[in-house]
Image (cartoon, rainbow, N blue to C red; front, side, top):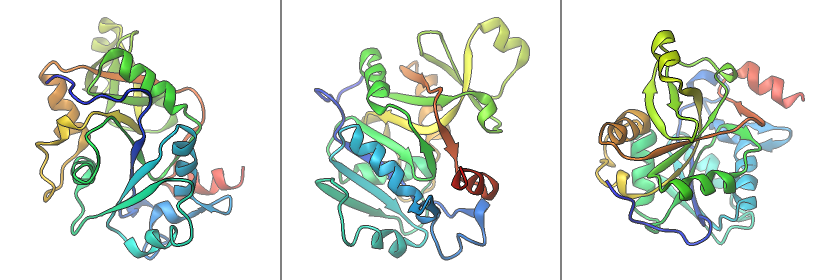
Length: 245
Protein backbone atom coordinates (compact mmCIF):
# COMPACT_ATOMS: atom_id res chain seq x y z
CA UNK A 1 0.00 0.00 0.00
CA UNK A 2 1.48 3.35 -1.01
CA UNK A 3 1.14 6.53 0.91
CA UNK A 4 -1.36 8.84 -0.80
CA UNK A 5 -2.34 11.71 1.46
CA UNK A 6 0.09 14.54 2.06
CA UNK A 7 0.45 17.32 4.58
CA UNK A 8 2.63 20.22 3.48
CA UNK A 9 3.99 21.34 6.84
CA UNK A 10 2.54 19.80 9.99
CA UNK A 11 -0.68 17.89 10.67
CA UNK A 12 -3.53 20.21 11.56
CA UNK A 13 -5.94 17.57 12.77
CA UNK A 14 -5.95 14.95 15.50
CA UNK A 15 -8.04 12.20 17.04
CA UNK A 16 -8.26 11.81 20.81
CA UNK A 17 -9.35 8.33 21.86
CA UNK A 18 -11.65 8.74 24.87
CA UNK A 19 -14.25 6.00 24.45
CA UNK A 20 -12.74 3.44 26.83
CA UNK A 21 -14.60 1.96 29.78
CA UNK A 22 -11.80 2.57 32.29
CA UNK A 23 -12.23 -0.90 33.75
CA UNK A 24 -8.86 -0.84 35.53
CA UNK A 25 -9.96 2.22 37.51
CA UNK A 26 -13.38 1.05 38.61
CA UNK A 27 -15.39 1.93 40.62
CA UNK A 28 -14.27 5.56 40.23
CA UNK A 29 -14.82 5.42 36.46
CA UNK A 30 -18.32 4.01 36.79
CA UNK A 31 -19.83 7.49 36.44
CA UNK A 32 -16.78 9.51 35.35
CA UNK A 33 -14.96 8.68 32.09
CA UNK A 34 -11.24 8.11 32.62
CA UNK A 35 -10.09 11.09 30.48
CA UNK A 36 -12.21 13.38 32.68
CA UNK A 37 -10.60 12.26 35.95
CA UNK A 38 -8.75 15.10 37.71
CA UNK A 39 -4.98 15.30 37.62
CA UNK A 40 -3.41 18.31 39.31
CA UNK A 41 -6.84 19.93 39.34
CA UNK A 42 -7.47 19.46 35.60
CA UNK A 43 -9.09 16.63 33.64
CA UNK A 44 -6.49 14.28 32.14
CA UNK A 45 -7.79 15.07 28.65
CA UNK A 46 -6.86 18.75 28.99
CA UNK A 47 -3.14 17.95 29.09
CA UNK A 48 -3.39 16.20 25.74
CA UNK A 49 -5.31 19.15 24.34
CA UNK A 50 -2.43 21.42 25.34
CA UNK A 51 0.05 19.01 23.74
CA UNK A 52 -1.86 19.09 20.46
CA UNK A 53 -2.26 22.87 20.45
CA UNK A 54 1.47 23.26 21.02
CA UNK A 55 2.08 21.04 17.98
CA UNK A 56 -0.05 23.31 15.79
CA UNK A 57 -3.23 21.22 15.61
CA UNK A 58 -6.33 23.30 14.91
CA UNK A 59 -9.08 20.68 14.62
CA UNK A 60 -9.72 17.62 16.77
CA UNK A 61 -12.17 14.75 16.86
CA UNK A 62 -12.87 12.97 20.16
CA UNK A 63 -14.43 9.53 20.10
CA UNK A 64 -17.02 8.82 22.79
CA UNK A 65 -18.78 5.81 24.27
CA UNK A 66 -18.61 5.56 28.06
CA UNK A 67 -20.32 8.52 29.79
CA UNK A 68 -20.26 10.70 26.65
CA UNK A 69 -22.23 13.56 28.24
CA UNK A 70 -19.58 14.04 30.91
CA UNK A 71 -16.91 14.49 28.24
CA UNK A 72 -19.03 16.80 26.12
CA UNK A 73 -19.63 19.01 29.14
CA UNK A 74 -15.92 19.72 29.41
CA UNK A 75 -16.21 21.70 26.16
CA UNK A 76 -19.39 23.64 26.91
CA UNK A 77 -17.65 26.92 27.60
CA UNK A 78 -14.45 26.73 25.57
CA UNK A 79 -12.87 25.29 22.44
CA UNK A 80 -9.45 25.59 24.12
CA UNK A 81 -8.00 27.47 21.17
CA UNK A 82 -9.05 24.95 18.51
CA UNK A 83 -10.93 26.07 15.43
CA UNK A 84 -13.22 23.04 15.55
CA UNK A 85 -13.94 20.23 18.00
CA UNK A 86 -15.90 17.25 16.71
CA UNK A 87 -17.27 14.23 18.54
CA UNK A 88 -17.52 10.71 17.15
CA UNK A 89 -20.15 8.89 19.21
CA UNK A 90 -19.97 5.10 19.15
CA UNK A 91 -23.22 3.16 19.71
CA UNK A 92 -21.09 0.21 20.77
CA UNK A 93 -17.43 0.36 21.61
CA UNK A 94 -15.36 -0.10 18.46
CA UNK A 95 -11.83 -0.50 19.82
CA UNK A 96 -8.82 1.48 18.69
CA UNK A 97 -8.98 0.67 14.98
CA UNK A 98 -12.75 0.91 14.70
CA UNK A 99 -12.80 4.15 16.67
CA UNK A 100 -10.11 5.72 14.49
CA UNK A 101 -11.80 4.54 11.29
CA UNK A 102 -15.16 6.00 12.34
CA UNK A 103 -13.62 9.32 13.37
CA UNK A 104 -11.74 9.57 10.07
CA UNK A 105 -15.02 9.37 8.16
CA UNK A 106 -15.81 12.93 9.23
CA UNK A 107 -12.29 14.33 8.81
CA UNK A 108 -10.12 15.52 5.96
CA UNK A 109 -8.08 12.88 4.12
CA UNK A 110 -4.83 14.12 5.63
CA UNK A 111 -2.06 13.03 7.92
CA UNK A 112 -3.47 12.85 11.44
CA UNK A 113 -2.18 12.66 15.00
CA UNK A 114 -3.83 10.03 17.20
CA UNK A 115 -3.48 10.09 20.99
CA UNK A 116 -4.89 7.95 23.75
CA UNK A 117 -6.92 10.11 26.11
CA UNK A 118 -5.43 8.62 29.28
CA UNK A 119 -1.71 9.36 28.94
CA UNK A 120 0.47 12.18 30.23
CA UNK A 121 3.59 13.05 28.25
CA UNK A 122 5.89 15.84 27.15
CA UNK A 123 6.63 14.29 23.75
CA UNK A 124 7.43 16.64 20.88
CA UNK A 125 4.75 15.74 18.34
CA UNK A 126 6.44 17.81 15.65
CA UNK A 127 9.51 15.57 15.84
CA UNK A 128 7.31 12.47 15.58
CA UNK A 129 5.83 13.92 12.41
CA UNK A 130 9.26 14.82 11.02
CA UNK A 131 10.27 11.16 11.23
CA UNK A 132 6.94 10.12 9.73
CA UNK A 133 7.39 12.43 6.78
CA UNK A 134 11.07 11.67 6.18
CA UNK A 135 10.41 7.91 6.07
CA UNK A 136 7.16 8.22 4.08
CA UNK A 137 5.55 5.83 6.52
CA UNK A 138 1.89 4.86 6.59
CA UNK A 139 2.06 5.17 10.37
CA UNK A 140 4.66 6.26 12.90
CA UNK A 141 4.31 4.93 16.43
CA UNK A 142 5.86 6.57 19.47
CA UNK A 143 7.55 4.06 21.78
CA UNK A 144 8.99 4.28 25.28
CA UNK A 145 11.46 2.18 27.23
CA UNK A 146 10.15 -1.31 28.06
CA UNK A 147 10.64 -0.70 31.79
CA UNK A 148 7.94 1.99 31.80
CA UNK A 149 5.04 -0.49 31.88
CA UNK A 150 4.48 -4.23 31.83
CA UNK A 151 3.13 -5.51 28.51
CA UNK A 152 3.04 -8.74 26.54
CA UNK A 153 3.88 -7.27 23.14
CA UNK A 154 6.58 -4.87 22.00
CA UNK A 155 7.46 -2.77 18.97
CA UNK A 156 10.69 -4.14 17.44
CA UNK A 157 12.49 -1.64 15.21
CA UNK A 158 15.80 -0.98 13.48
CA UNK A 159 18.35 1.70 14.35
CA UNK A 160 16.80 3.91 11.67
CA UNK A 161 13.33 3.48 13.14
CA UNK A 162 11.81 1.01 10.68
CA UNK A 163 9.42 -1.31 12.50
CA UNK A 164 10.27 -4.93 11.72
CA UNK A 165 7.70 -6.71 13.84
CA UNK A 166 5.24 -6.33 16.69
CA UNK A 167 5.10 -9.13 19.20
CA UNK A 168 6.53 -10.66 22.37
CA UNK A 169 10.14 -10.42 23.44
CA UNK A 170 12.06 -13.51 22.40
CA UNK A 171 15.52 -13.43 23.98
CA UNK A 172 17.55 -15.29 21.35
CA UNK A 173 15.73 -13.96 18.31
CA UNK A 174 15.88 -10.38 19.58
CA UNK A 175 19.64 -10.49 20.12
CA UNK A 176 20.24 -12.09 16.76
CA UNK A 177 18.15 -9.52 14.89
CA UNK A 178 19.88 -6.62 16.70
CA UNK A 179 16.57 -4.74 16.86
CA UNK A 180 15.63 -2.24 19.52
CA UNK A 181 12.30 -2.78 21.23
CA UNK A 182 9.91 -0.52 23.07
CA UNK A 183 6.39 -0.19 24.40
CA UNK A 184 3.80 1.50 22.20
CA UNK A 185 3.06 4.83 23.89
CA UNK A 186 -0.49 5.31 22.55
CA UNK A 187 0.72 8.12 20.28
CA UNK A 188 0.85 7.78 16.52
CA UNK A 189 0.88 9.73 13.29
CA UNK A 190 -1.23 8.05 10.63
CA UNK A 191 -2.24 8.22 7.02
CA UNK A 192 -5.97 7.57 6.56
CA UNK A 193 -5.78 5.02 3.75
CA UNK A 194 -5.01 1.91 5.87
CA UNK A 195 -8.15 2.59 7.91
CA UNK A 196 -10.56 2.76 4.98
CA UNK A 197 -11.20 -1.03 4.95
CA UNK A 198 -11.82 -1.15 8.72
CA UNK A 199 -15.54 -1.59 9.51
CA UNK A 200 -17.02 1.06 11.78
CA UNK A 201 -19.69 -1.24 13.18
CA UNK A 202 -17.45 -3.90 14.74
CA UNK A 203 -14.68 -3.95 17.33
CA UNK A 204 -11.14 -3.99 15.94
CA UNK A 205 -7.64 -3.44 17.28
CA UNK A 206 -5.22 -1.00 15.65
CA UNK A 207 -2.18 -3.18 16.38
CA UNK A 208 -3.63 -6.54 15.36
CA UNK A 209 -6.03 -5.51 12.60
CA UNK A 210 -4.09 -2.64 11.00
CA UNK A 211 -0.40 -2.48 11.85
CA UNK A 212 0.28 -6.22 11.94
CA UNK A 213 -1.37 -6.61 8.54
CA UNK A 214 0.57 -3.69 7.07
CA UNK A 215 3.85 -5.21 8.23
CA UNK A 216 2.88 -8.53 6.68
CA UNK A 217 2.28 -6.68 3.40
CA UNK A 218 5.72 -5.08 3.56
CA UNK A 219 4.44 -1.56 4.21
CA UNK A 220 6.63 1.02 5.91
CA UNK A 221 5.90 1.73 9.57
CA UNK A 222 8.25 3.72 11.78
CA UNK A 223 8.98 3.93 15.50
CA UNK A 224 9.89 7.17 17.27
CA UNK A 225 11.66 6.63 20.59
CA UNK A 226 10.59 9.02 23.36
CA UNK A 227 12.86 9.20 26.40
CA UNK A 228 11.03 11.95 28.28
CA UNK A 229 7.95 12.03 30.47
CA UNK A 230 5.29 9.44 29.77
CA UNK A 231 2.67 7.95 32.06
CA UNK A 232 -0.12 5.48 31.38
CA UNK A 233 -2.80 6.65 33.82
CA UNK A 234 -4.92 3.53 33.60
CA UNK A 235 -4.04 2.29 37.09
CA UNK A 236 -5.16 3.96 40.32
CA UNK A 237 -1.75 3.77 41.99
CA UNK A 238 -0.11 5.47 38.98
CA UNK A 239 -2.80 8.16 38.85
CA UNK A 240 -2.33 8.91 42.57
CA UNK A 241 1.46 8.93 42.30
CA UNK A 242 1.50 11.35 39.35
CA UNK A 243 -1.17 13.56 40.97
CA UNK A 244 1.02 14.03 44.05
CA UNK A 245 4.16 14.97 42.13
